[in-house]
Length: 312
Image 1 (cartoon, helix red, strand yellow):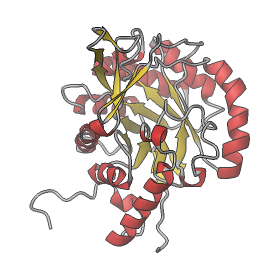
Image 2: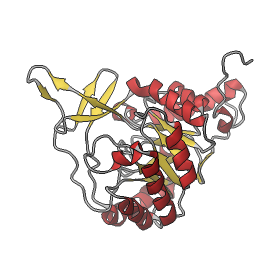
Image 3: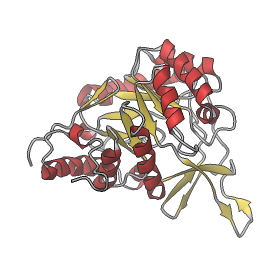
C-alpha cells in the first residue's frame, strides 16, 4: 500500500488520523485499552461533562432496535472537577503518552454560564472542546440551546470567550434547516462542527403497553441514521468552510468515506464500537486503501470530493 497522508486539521486540532470515537461510546478514553488499536485514532471524545455531578436518567437506559440503538443514558457523569482530578492523569499515562492521541472533552450544561465555566476549567487539561447543544435525553439543559439560532449563538460565544482551545459545536439533526444553525456557530467563533447527534425516538413494549426506557424517550443511533447524517453533512458543507466531524451509522470504511465525500474532515465511530471494537482499525485501513485506489495522496483530498450529477 502506498503511503497516504492520513493527518487532518479539525479547527486547529491536529490529528494523525481522520478516525475519532464519539462521545458517550468510549467512556473516558481508557476503557477500550486492549480492544481498540489506538495508533489508528485521531482523537478520543470523552463522555459528556457538566459543572457538577449528574446521575443521568432512570433505568432502563437503552434498547436495541432494528438497525440501531435507542438510549437515554442522560449524560451521567462526575462533574468537571472530578473528571480532571480522576480521569486525566490516567488518560495521559495510558493513552496520550504511549499513543499521542489527543482528548476532546464533550461539555454540556443547563445555562450559558455553566457551559462557559466548564470550558474554562478544562482549558489546561484537554486538547479541544466539543459542545453538546443537541442531546435529546435531558429534560433540562443541552437540547434547548440547539433549537434556536440566537440562543445557540449566545452560548457558543460565551464558551469561545472562556477558552482558546479548538471549539467544536455538536448540532442536532432534527431542525427544519441546518443552515441558520451553522451560520450562528460560525459567526459566534466556532472552529468546527460536529454532526449528527442522535435522533429523538421512542420504544414501546406492546406486551406491557409501557415505554421500554425509564426516561420514556431517548436518542436513536446506528446504521438506521446514516443517510440522515450524510445529508446533514452535505447541507452544512454548502454553507460553511468550517471543518466537520461527522458521525452517524459508521460501521465500516464505506460509511466513513461516504460522509467524507459529502464534506466531512473527519469521522467518528460510535454505536458500532459496542459490537465490534475492531471497527476503528477497519475504518482507518479502508479509508487509506480507498485513497490509494482513487489516486489521493492525502485523506484531506477526500473531503467534499463528491461529484454532482453532470460532473465528469
